[in-house]
Image (cartoon, rainbow, N blue to C red; front, top):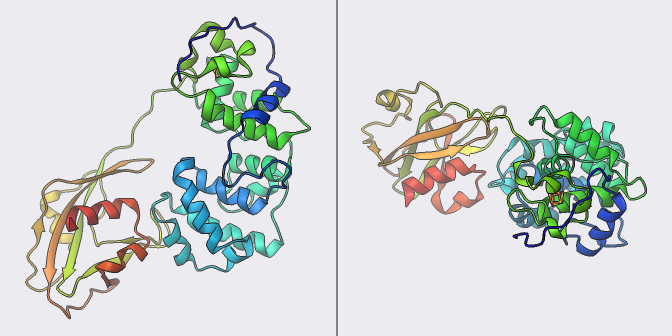
Length: 358
Ligand code: SF4
């Protein structure tokens, strides 16, 4: 959205919670997990959506949220679910540790008879960090907490023209966000701040003319909104490389295995592969291939790339075919190709299979 109208901001006037809440009452987003006006928020739904929304967009989360709620309508139902079923339903949302923590947290909450109401107690539950604890406390229980995510950081650094770089500025941003809080409508205030960051105070070309706080915003006054928040130069993780082995059996089955429970992509499904290393030697890739008598490995053209939060990955892919009745090596299993959608395959493995099977 472009800003055609230049308002005259009045510097040094503090942003009023009331102005933001009045804007929220008119323009709040209708989100599947958000309680409608007059409805009491359901802590289970708030928690479930907040866990799913970590590092993921509203658009991506919506169908997952609907499926989870249909399958496990209460925290007790989720607590009783099998971890495998949860991982399968989660496949494609990424960051699989969240799905495992989701299960552990549901079990803990079911055992204690419900979610705790304050930030500190919420933080002790599996998978609930500072942001999520504040979001659940505010939205589900109207506690005086302000969840600060990237959107809120952007709004606050612009309002106060904070020159400190992220992440150093985080503590100051949190304190300033808290100082703006409306004590009588804490839950609405938190959601209003999220909505403002998500819809009006966008990273590029914020729609300041429509912003309820434009008269108090120092970045708007200076005309350099887009330069906030100031960020330290990001150092990317070092590239790791490896090999993946796609083995097809003549009766339309594919060789898969389950990753170890702990660690990256824990308990997810994968095709056999080498270790992922900075100093991977492609000339020795086949040393890590599953052993089949007389297997002819074909190295596929191109590589599969994927970026994890802390490193980029590049995989070369080998493919072979083996006769029907070939036994799976220890720790692996044959899965009919038509059943692949029921497997907890992380995105990187879906890319490998698409590369090999297309
Ligand atoms: S005036 Fe513009 S930059 Fe300032 S908070 Fe509002 S949308 Fe963001």
